[in-house]
Image 1 (cartoon, rainbow, N blue to C red):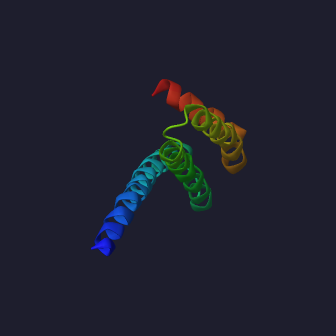
Image 2: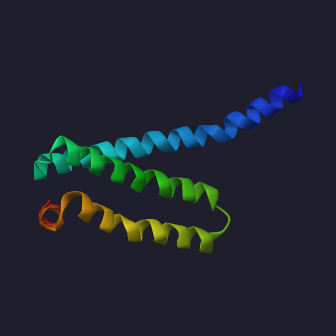
Amino acid sequence: MSKKYILIFALTFSAPAVFVQNIAAEKADKITDEMAQVLSLSKEEKAKFYAIQHCRFQTPMEIRIQYAGDIDAKKAALHKIYDKLHGKLLEAIGSDRMKAWGNFKRNY
C-alpha cells in the first residue's frame, strides 16, 4: 500500500518536469527555425542557437516551479538567467545578425 503512495507521489512531481521540457523544446524549435530562415544560419549556428533558446525557456520554467513560494528568490534567479541570454546570443551569431534580427522583429 505504501509503495502505491510513493509511486503516485513520484509521478506527480516528475510529470511537470517532462511537461516543461516539451514546451521549452517546442518554443526553442519555433524561434530557431524562424531565425534560421530570416538570417540564413548554418547548421552549426542553428544548433548553437537552439541550445541557447532551449535553455532560455526551460530554465525559467524550472525556476518558477522551484521558487513558487518565494517571490524574491524567484525574481533574483530569473534576473540572472535573462542577463546572460543576450551575451550568449551575441557570441553565437554576432552583432550584425543580432541587429538584423532585431530589425526583423520590429517590422514583423
